[in-house]
Length: 78
Image (cartoon, rainbow, N blue to C red; front, side, top):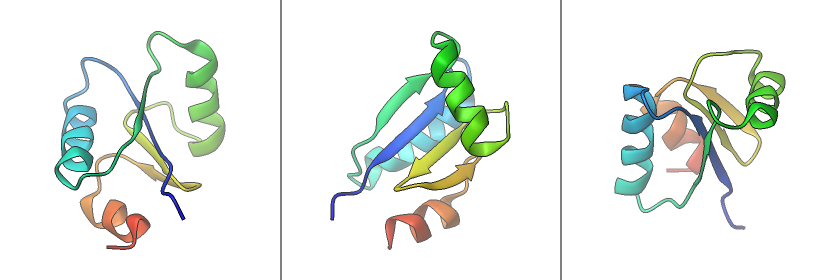
């Protein structure tokens, strides 16, 4: 089964950048959604996570708030 990863982020968020660099280092493709530019996607992120802060990662429906390597690895099955 293909892993679907969405990263809700902003351009100025250092933890967002770290999360995306971590996924890239693991060879995991992801969709990067800039919630500062897309209000509909920002609302989608809030609906999924209950949070307004970034990053929020959606890994096959598992929601991770913040840059949490352990949770990311667990969700990726690694």
